[in-house]
Length: 223
Ligand code: DX5
Ligand code: ZN
Image (tube, rainbow, N blue to C red):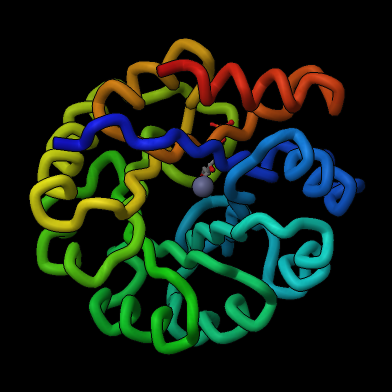
């Protein structure tokens, strides 16, 4: 069984002040963030455009926390090296982004990063099973990707439960991360379902810099 995995908080900088990104990354690192979650969107795979490898590189000196880079782009493979060289520690991608997800996992690991697979709310959990043995992280989307500030989709709790059981049986120790609509009310439910890493944009950054430490601690204590 899973016992009680340590809960990690991964603030999504999508909800930060983009004019002060470096300061924001420093502030959340100091406030207790475990990972820095960086949402990369291309205006093609998802209907929004955010940041690329140059921004990741510029942020790298501002934190010693692992950079958890969530790629919402297609294709993925041509950009892996650029993100790893920019300082990505974990690279997660969506299986719909290309025809060969296993090759993408291999490419991420060959480049020297940890590999994560992301399941959209409409993506069946079965997509994960052939890749599970090679993954370092599984990310369950509890909103449709593209924007911060959306409402948590309840049906994804069941998916988290199914994946948690399988991880404990076959690959204990890897991260099960949940992303989208995580707040003080949904966090405990995601943890109860088996998630051990919570991505939180809106819930981390609300109230401004003086609130970050309390926000992160409250999310972490939600169990
Ligand atoms: C959505 C992103 C999320 C998002 C989370 O596509 O992957 O990381 O920023 O934002 P909140 O926590 O505000 O739902
Ligand atoms: Zn994300």
